[in-house]
Length: 354
Image (cartoon, rainbow, N blue to C red; front, side, top):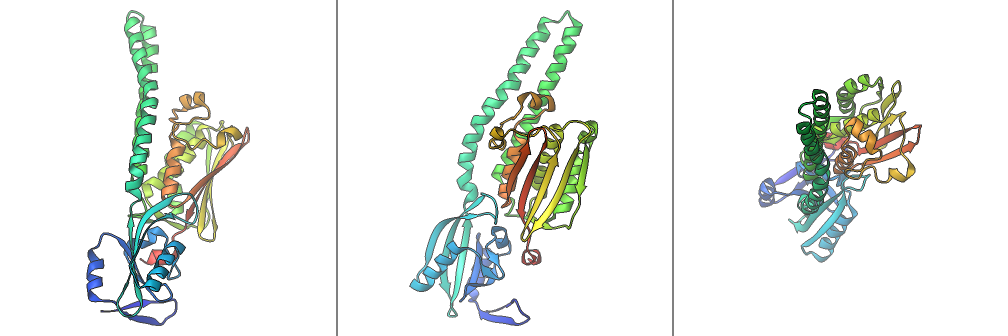
């Protein structure tokens, strides 16, 4: 079978790919690349772009290139398990099983890629998660138990019953919020948003997150400012990315005094878009900055109880950003404010055309 692919110029290249290979690739449960000599990509699976392996029609992974070169030198099948970055920034990785074989008579190389990331992460995530949850659930459940006993003991004092019942409502709400965020974090950890990624407008994501936080901000007399700039597009899950920005804005609102501003802005540097959420709040001590993305960690436990914070919001943000091939950082100064910055790879034109 002859395949034609549009190149970087107006000319079309023509090459021969065996019929049997095309039939197999149509049904195989793996991402794939077909490379001609010079390691130029002439055909690939539709979802391969989520792995960020192609740039300007060429394979953009030195580790996989080494496998292809070894297959060409030896004329033998090559296989390796590789840990590759999920994007150009951040610490997130894909655990990939990569197989390379030469096919046909024109020097074509077939690269099959199996993503084992989810299977490898699942056991470790669940073990750690269960240990943390069991500890965190004890506090509100214990409080509800004590308050219910107090209500029973004060049955002849209506004022005391009202006071204890009010406290029970607060603890029940805390428990409900905690369970909800545990579910959210579990879903984020167990999913891979790049496997079925959508093309998303960054500005639309930010507007949606701002709208979700506006009522709370208004009640606290805090102005939400969106410095809208040139739009960009990213690949990912709309719900998760909106949740990440929402959590940052909500956190900024909760830790800001009345009559201040929380501003959201974007900037673009080559292939990276940076989303920044800045507040004029209480700031974070240097000693605390390194721990704020840990699960259930609270800088100010008293403020967390007041605002209903669970200590999971920033951890959820970190996981979402990492899963999208990005990274999150924070600048903060006590009594001045904080700025959280999310950096994500911009969707390329090639990815947009797929």
